[in-house]
Length: 180
Image 1 (cartoon, rainbow, N blue to C red):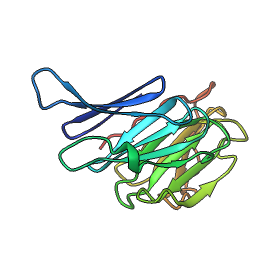
Image 2: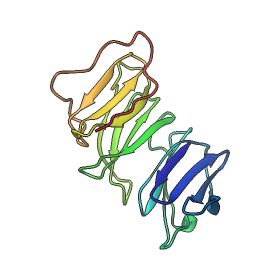
Image 3: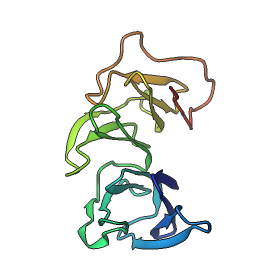
């Protein structure tokens, strides 16, 4: 998994997350954080924190110290944020909520500072896994899953958007991207 925020690149391998300084001609490893529970399935980052979704359904937030560096000692970990693998993470540009989708079929919104759940929906994709997530410039949240649909949600409250899901895939939707 990879995530970028400003001059920082975050990469996840087996059991660790690394932070790289991209402001140099040759990027330099700045800090690392060991994972207490599981391999990282997905990452996203802001200017002050990096978030990881775990293969075991966990959700972790590491604050970044001023000037760079992962503050591993101040990590917040939710060991059972989802009952299945966290497949994707995104931050909502309007509300700031951290959004997650999981192989358990659910979509959740979290307070990014505390990791308290603020919205949740189950069986978002017909009882199958939710595998992909993107936030459009219009503020709509898009999720893809095993049912071959792209579901649309009004925002971080995860209320279904008018017009219903987008149909057209005959196989699971595994990746999404939304642009301006």
